[in-house]
Structure formats: C-alpha cells, structure tokens
Length: 220
Image (cartoon, rainbow, N blue to C red; front, side):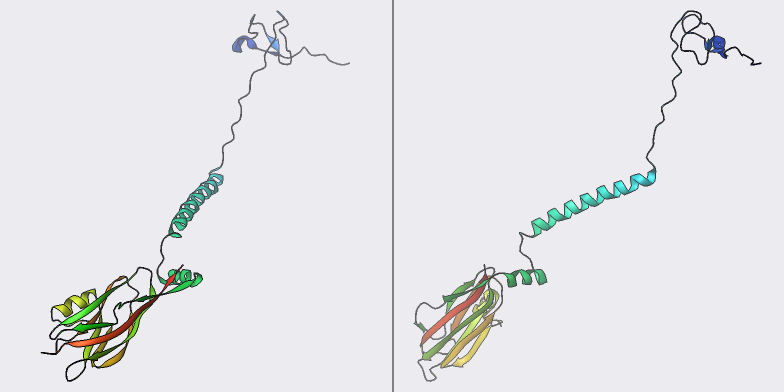
C-alpha cells in the first residue's frame, strides 16, 4: 500500500506566505493554490569573484616595466642626436668618414720683424677638428746672425708672451736662421698664434720668408 503524503507547504505565515493573499504555498508550487498568484522564487545572492593579490602583483610590475622602458628609450633617442665623448664618441667617429682640411696660415711669403719687436699671424682651430698640426718652413736674414726665434702659442700663452712672462709653447725654434715648422696642436677649438720674435736684436730688423699650413681632420 502506497502511502500518499500531502504536498509540503512552506509556512509563509512567518515569511508572509503568498505576496497576494498571504496563504501558505507548497515549496514546489509556482502558483498560489488559494488565489492563483504567480509565486516568484526567492533570489539567491550573486557571487562576486575577487582577484587574488598574487595575480595583481605581476600586472603592476609589468606596467612599471613598460613605463621604465618607454622613458629610457626616449632618453636614448635624445642622446643619439647629441655629441658623445669617451669610447662611445670614438666609435661614432670611426664609423664616420674623415675629411682632411688644409688652410694656409701665412698669406704673405715674407715679413719684416723690427728690432726689439715681434710679429705674429693668428689662426683658428674650429670645433670638431682632430689630428691638428701646423707645418711649414721659415728662413731669416739680417744682422750678424741672420736669425729669428719662432713660436706657436695658444691664447693664454700668447698673452703671457706679450707681457714678458713664461709661456707654454707648442713649437719653439730657438734662435735659428732657418728651420722647418712642426707643431702638433690639441683638438681644442680656439685661437692660436705663429709668432716671430726679434726682441733679442737691439738694432737690426730681420726679413723672414715663411710658409706655414694648418692641417686637421673633420668627420662628416
């Protein structure tokens, strides 16, 4: 014998029962047995997924790394258009093509230097010049010794020389009748001077024939 059981009812007296008539409604029923009102099943809370902290850390580190690389790539791009010094600058110069530049320093082939006086020619080394040298020859006549003294000076040395002080020279012929001129100059832009000194002669001027050429390399 099969025992029939009445359908289970939910006691809606406590929860309010049918929202329309407040009658008790079975748990499985979609309609109120008393008034026929559609019953809405209770809503379940919606679960929320929270990202674990260990997942967020790699994401943050990745963003920081991307920003870091972007900043340094920008700095490297700016640095690439600036002149470089040291080993990096040397490698850049090796990759570029050098051009030899020659410029006559002495325009006149002869000059006269009075007794107890000196004469000079000024010339300029431009920025970016390397392997700089001054080469040439001079010959002096006049007086008992037929001699002159020739120097190559930078701006500071020339100022000291004019005021009778010791000066650093890049070339010093000593008192000579004739001699080749050979001066290796620094790769530093500025004004330089080829000086003919006759201050040791008390009475006799000197005639000097001279030919001097400035040579240097520039990189294109």
